[in-house]
Every structure is written in C-alpha cells, then in structure tokens.
Length: 171
Length: 293
Image: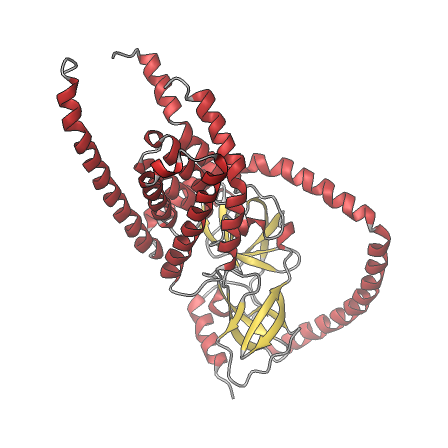
C-alpha cells in the first residue's frame, strides 16, 4: 500500500494523539489551583492514559512513548527521575498481557479492573520512592492519590474514547 | 516483497515481539539508571529539568492568571460574608500589634545601641525579589512549586523563599525564566533552625506531611507546644531569624512544627538575596557556637 506524503504526515499526527493528550494532562495537573493540599492527592492522570491506550489501542502507545511520558512527568513535577517511567512501563506490561480479559467487559468492570491497577501502581510508586529516599515516607497521600485517580477514570476514559472515535477513526 | 506477505509476516511477528521485549528491558534499565543518577547532582539532569521547566513556564503562566482571578473572586465573596466578624478580629489584633510595635521599637533602639557598644559585625543586607507562583505541587511524593523568575531575573540556587507569613522553602533549580522551590515539607528539605526563647538548635526535616519534624535536638532541650521556630542562619544559606512556624506537638522526643505559611494561598513569594561574605568563617563560627556549656 502506498501512501502520499500528506497522508503519511496526517497518519503520523493522529498516532501522536495518545501521547500528546497524556503529556498535556500532566501539564494541566500542575496548574496552581490553590486548593489546600489538592496538589498532593490530585489524580495521577498518566496512569489513566497508559491503562486506556494499552487496553484499547496498544499500537498507539509504544513502550518508548510510555518511558518518555514518565520521564516528562518526573521532570515536570520535580520528582525523582525514572520512578514514573518504571511504574508506567510495568502498568503497560500488565495491561497488555491482560488485554483479552479487560476489553470484552462492560465499562463498570473495566473501571473496577482499573481500580486494582491504580492501587498496585501507587504501591510501586511508594516502594520506589522509599528506595530512593532511603527513608520512610507518609503513604497516606499515595492512598488518596490512588482514590482520586480511580474517581477520575470515567471522565478521562470518556475523553480518550472521544479522541479515539473522532481523531483515530481513519484506522 | 508485497507479493509474498505470508513469509514476511511469519518472520516479522516473532522478531517484533523480541524487539519489544528487548526494548522494554533496555528502557527499564534506563529508568533504574535514572533513579540512581538522579540522586547525584549531575549537570545534564539539572539542565533537562530546567529546560522542561522553562518550556512549561509560558503555558502555566497563562493558566495561572484566570485561576488566580477565579480564586480572587471566591475569596472576595467569602470575605464579604464574614466581614463583620473579621473586622472585629482585626481591630483586636491591631490593638495587640500596636502594643507590640512600641515594644519592638524600644528593643530595636536598645539593640542598635548595644550593637554599637560591642562593635557587632552587621549581617549583610537582604534584598528581595518577588515572583508569581505558576506551578502547583505535582503528586503525592514531591512538595515543590514553580515560580516565574529565573536566571534572567537574578535568581540563584539556594535562595530562601518566603511569604509575608514565613519561610516557604528554598530554590533548588533555576532556569532562564522559572525556578523550582522545594517546600519545607518535602522529604529532602533540611533547614537549620532555632526553637523557642531558649534558642535550642535543631534541624527542621520535611517528611512530605504537612508538619515537618525537628531533629538533632540537644538531649536537654525543653520544648513546649507553641514555641516559635526561626531559621538559625547556620551554614550561611538562609539569613538568621526568618520566621518558620510553631511547635505543634511534642511526643516521645519528636517535635512537629506547624509552618506559618498558608499553603492554599501561595500566589506570590519573595526570594531572598542574601550573600554572606566568607562562608567558611561563618561555618566555623556556627560549629563553635553549637558547643553547649
């Protein structure tokens, strides 16, 4: 199959949508809302993105894109480098291997599965942060972050679903 | 090739899977390497951080303005609601403050006279630079904020960041147009402090909770809830005497400090320019002073 240059660029731009959308959400979640303590428990949106795309369109979010997304996340938030990359890549690996058991289910069940992934991902985050800080850290914000991420899932899964339907219909 | 897709596919699929697995391992190792390297102070990593920071600044700056407007409106509305009670509280606090002002003036005059008598070496003058907060804390594991001022405005690493209420933290990375301030509450924050009227030396150590701990207190130090905590100026990074907070609780020898800063209303902060001449001498003096009689 031969593609014209314009078509190729168009396809390439469309393939970039999942990554660009996830990176944009990282930036937006940094906006200073000035709600006391909200920053610490704000949903970890990259996980929603990685879960959604790895389940629905794994071809559009390759492993190196997940690595870059995590790196961008760490650089933008000022956190320890490599932690987000590692956690997101592990999440992607798990979702990809369980894809067949996730996709056929209705939305509510997918949400429950996501909740499980979110709790596991926060545990990995806490473990890696404890390793790096070589000190115990307060795990409560991580628990609340897991809960807020689970609560944010329907909205952002819907948003990604819309993006998939409108922008990526060509495939 | 296109004529025999079967053969190509049969070869390409396992190859692709193998490449994927190899790539995953490679990237996982890269992530681990970053975790190890990130602890060391590496120029390249610092540059990457500041580059991302600077890249985000215009976007976050644009976002922070409408948010500040909305927040301002909400604050205005809530203040209108309890205007009378607030007025009464302010009147009372004003009376108290006037009394304190008189005392402060007396003490200042006396202080100046005594310093004159002792030929006291004055502290270098502190100059301020105000910057807007454009980036909130990102996530459950870091306590830091972004401000819209960088090397172009003369910001340097290590500067103290304050609001009118008290110390916020310290500048940890500086880009062209933006800087990151590590808050007092972050797990990596260490601030040498003096506690209470007895001026016990301690280290204020963050643990990612709202109340940082006081560590390395002398065994005989007697702390009480409500004691004020100020910077000691040890190490010459911060000027001495910056207000930080009050001791919130003392349990089993661990004291927690409640900072004065209102974290929910960090809109603009002041970065202190404090150049201490002869840092080594100051250090020597500090260790000498630490010896207790």
